[in-house]
Amino acid sequence: MEAFFLQKRFLLSAMKPELLVKEDNNELKCELQRKEELLARHYEKISQWQNLLADLQTPQPALQQAASPMQAPCGVQQAVPQHQQAPKTEFNSPLTVQQMAAAAAAQQAAALQQQALQQQQVPRPPLPPAYPANVQRR
Image (tube, rainbow, N blue to C red; front, side, top):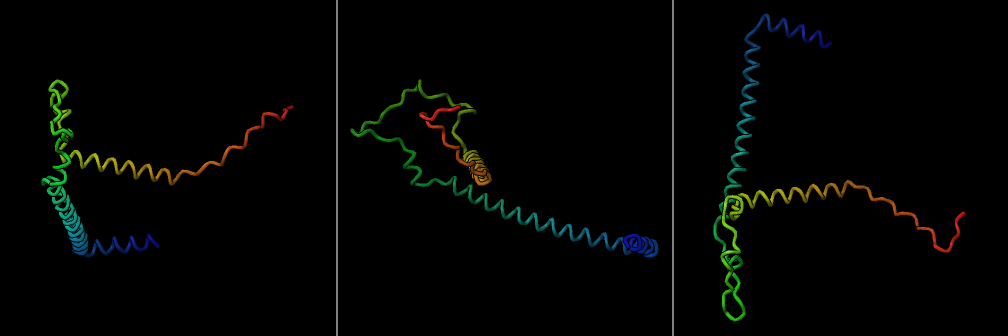
């Protein structure tokens, strides 16, 4: 059956090669349309992430208050000696918003993976009770 259709297709391509070109043209148009839709979805996601990043970068009053140093009960600021502070390098500099978001995403992915593994695990049956101490064994 398949050979019959292949033979007919071969005859058609030999007699009317413009049909092959039209078919290829239609396939390319469909592929272009599919890729344009994919690009549009990606641009939407990029704009959503940019909005989220912009929201995170704007100063928020609640976070600023929490980030401010705590005062001692008597109203005197506790000073941190300079020798205890590590020098700022590229390795221990404060995390950027992107790094924090990436770390949070990685932590969430790890938690989801761990939860999935826990759901897949089959609980083991309880161990049999140990022999009592006063029973003699043979």
